Image 1 (tube, rainbow, N blue to C red):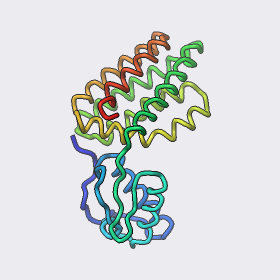
Image 2: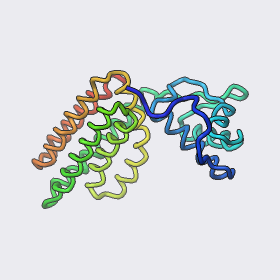
Image 3: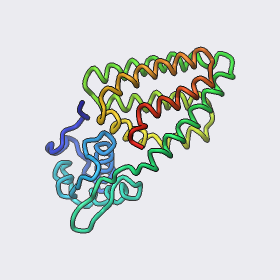
Length: 227
């Protein structure tokens, strides 16, 4: 299974040319490559190489690296470049804990509302089908983005803006963790799809407590060996 994008590709057509937009472009490209597993944990990146690939000067790339370091994705080494920061085991555990709490709370709210699950169930089935098509197309990046979307829809349906805002902080970590877990064992992709179908059925049945238990099992089955 491969992530989208090819390391070492030539300058991106239409790359930004102003300092502000160039830095934003460099940030987005490098961050996406980290989250999609193209830049592996511990790999070293150079400002010059990224600048050449994106058709821009080193200055906006340096700005992007500084922002990525501040967010915890990279660690900068003077005159050597930037290392992609591995995800510490405690961070895996904490993200999974937070996700379980937030998603379970959202589904309790959904199940307590009259008819609140119908739209969510329909949307979750659509996303699961999108995710299956991405896997069949050998597109890991699209698969992991759909995985994030599935769980984001669950949280959004709970209609708690504070929990939604907090969950948004976890989404990039969720995406990167799923990329790593599926890359480590591609059989997990079919398990993800099967368990997403099961979680959807529990919501349709109004079984919030069953969903909470199944979510804990789901997160452990997919990510447990990485924590």
